[in-house]
Amino acid sequence: MTDSSVHIRLANAQDKDTIVRVMEEAGLSTEAALAEGTTYWVAERGGQPVGAIGLEHGDTASLLRGAAILPAARGSGLGRRLVMSAVEYAQGRGDRAIYMFSKGGDWGTFGFTQVPLAVVMGDLPNAPQIQAYKAKSERPGGTTWMRALDTGASKA
Image (cartoon, rainbow, N blue to C red; front, side, top):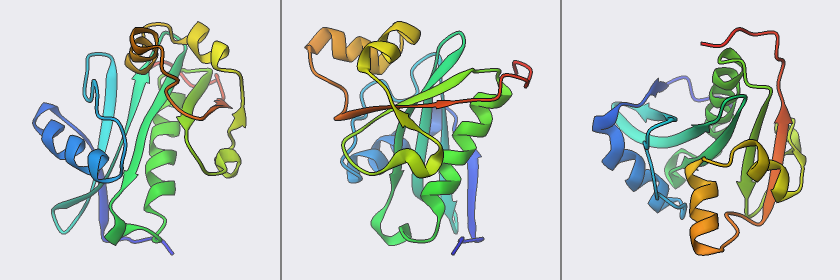
């Protein structure tokens, strides 16, 4: 069931504290949130933040950054709406693929397939998550996923 009372909007610099709080409450890393070369969205219900998601951009691909939904807003389809907002944005900018790291869940329902970590590192070497991985020698997630995108869209 989709919650029509939730509004998803592009985040701006003033939303950083909100995004960090939502992602921390969901147990996600907040390092480099709203860094240069990223795009984030905030989901609000009644003017209050209930979710957030971001993308780290490369030249021809993007990396999904934290699909976070507060517990009170889960089960309403909001997570799917946030992910699809990010996928549509990446398509609109002309990306050929979108990647993500996950510590759980089956992202195949969103059209993602598992790929080796080296693929993401090769396509997005300057993405904040990749840079953090290199600096700390820590894997940024348990499983690496990719969704091929329609490249017919023009770069926005």
